[in-house]
Picture 1 (cartoon, rainbow, N blue to C red):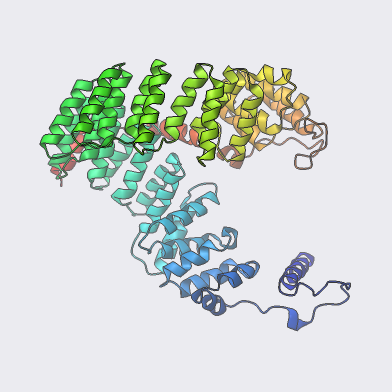
Picture 2 (tube, rainbow, N blue to C red):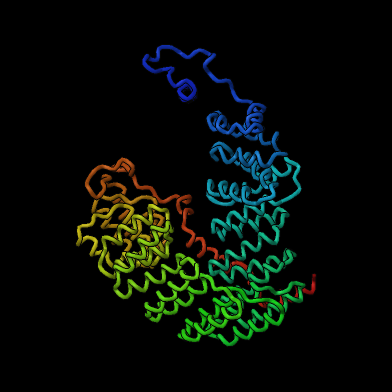
Length: 582
């Protein structure tokens, strides 16, 4: 009762100061506010009226008065206005909604012509929870029935949202739960999952899903066939990829430029340039004209084989026939000469593309800077960094890795650490390459008087764990604790990933116990009020904490899960049967 009164008092104070800023100014609070000053409760009708009139500023001010019950009632009244519902949901915090109201909103927003609002909402819902669960899908199904909506597209948005979040295992789990509910995903949704498995190099998992599509009688489309051809090429099974083109045609789908580009790139990556050229000739006969990706693949293949002069002649010949090269085309040549160590010719092609009005992109700069650092030409590399920043180009993880590794190689550890801080501040997660570069110069960090923070230690520990250096990660954890820096959730999550469950690891568990019981001081010796309190009792990592793993671990789990699935024994036989059953 006391808590409820306190909450009401705080709510009143907040509302009063918002609408009557001078109410309590220059005089003490001596009496209860009069009833006239307390805002009346917002009704679904009033909230609906505000939404219909697009009074978003007013709605944002009333956010604290909104509750799941009020929101659900309003959503039901606005079921025929998905565009307004989308705008309304965008303007309120997701914590104002419970699972039921979130699912109602998703089903309504799913009716919009553009999939983007529904996808964004699905991702917001998924991020706010530990993962996909039968509870989410049952609430979604209940919302669909409550709104008298026959379409199951909202379920597809859940899978597609998981795919965009790179949650491969969760996406496959969602598919299984949908199947148990008698709901089948659309082929486009399955294609999103196949593409994710392909990007994560989980080709076996792609075949598991493809077999599941066959069992569920989800007919493939041209995009499905192109993805599976790409899977075969990634597996190095180029002959099977060509056979798959035949199955694609038998199913009634004509191969397109994407189909041929995939196979051409596959042959070029294997160094079989002549085969690639033959396929390019075949596609021309069929009336499918090569594009910049086609030519770029062959140029990259020639450069990879060290046939740089031939690559230049090939480019000149294609330009004469009317082909307009792109940044991708020039990057293939620049990369080839960079790998050869011929910076003069590499920069020559960079200048040529600029003269032709083709703007160098991030990949262009990355290749040139990497070679400059390897040649010890740090000053020239720095001039390119300056040029990029002046152009307003945003650095990605590849760029940061090149710079950090380059400065580490040249002994400029301070600059490398500054870039690590910048990388983290920009929300870019370090990769295995980043960690490897920094771990090699760890001793030099202390020699130059660098005082690492918890963030730095976490980055290094995560790097060691990713490199399967659990022993070194444990030593670094001990060093971290000895310097008075208390490990946090990120530290433990990294150790769980790299060493395994800490409860099964005697020494790491002991170190964690000691770390949690020490006074919390940062490297400067000052108390840190944002960390654990002194003498706090050690508690094992909770199951929820263990679930908070990185995308890399999700990928590993997805790859491991295929061992439990019946993998197709004869992939092409399944495809052939699929065609005959159409």
